[in-house]
Image 1 (cartoon, rainbow, N blue to C red):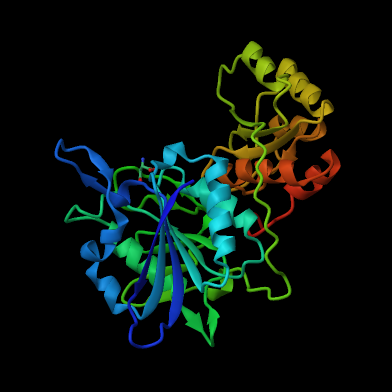
Image 2: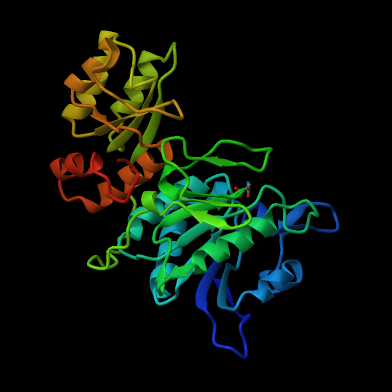
Length: 353
Ligand code: ASP
């Protein structure tokens, strides 16, 4: 992967108050219209022209821009790994801001949260619904506040020390978010976890709900993700033969089963038998709800009791985005099936309670 690098010292001649690594990966935020009216990525070296108020921060900002910025629909685990490596290689910086398309931002935030356990620094992902060049853009506010949060310190320590998404005035835990809106500015929600901060006239941090900095723990950097996973969403009329093909596919090692309500699925014997067969073949099946809020409680209804009995594990209140990335991460980092089964139901970094 090719990058461009740029240093902006907005504090000079004074020493900077903090150092920030700004990683530009692509997405709507950094687009401009070319002469044919098509949105294309703009040259990030001109960032100060678009956001002159950046100069008012007393910061050292290092910008790393992907040579070929991408729409986040093209983001893959290789990109997560690249982003993780860039952060690890700049671990001495005080904070990190990642500019990313909104479409898959929740997946990237979840993946990074697992990779960067022990970093103890703010990693703030943000983006925009409108390009930075459009007068009504949300890009400016999102970027400026994300930088402010990434550089915020109290008694010399970062206020935030986890992977988050900042968007439309709220700071959310990254692995609790979902993209819920494609037209309005409030693109993200975290239904099962309160915001870590809200930006009004001041940035109001809710420190009680943040992950606490753990100095004992240093960065345990794992960057591999096993892609032999699938999300299977249940719906009325789900077809026996198709389910069979998916569950018996030799390539599949882990399944996020998106069920109804508090974890319910059809009780048809063919369905339960297919699930049981897959589990007997050491395919891990994690039950995640299709609902935005609430949690999976296997055994509450008859329609989830049988899943529990054949060995489906409960994802609790985990989002699909956090679940599939966790499964990919643990599949590649656990040595045995039983280790995987133990770890998938325990929190790695605040994705479940
Ligand atoms: N398709 C774009 C992306 O995710 C949308 C956005 O940036 O918001 O890269």
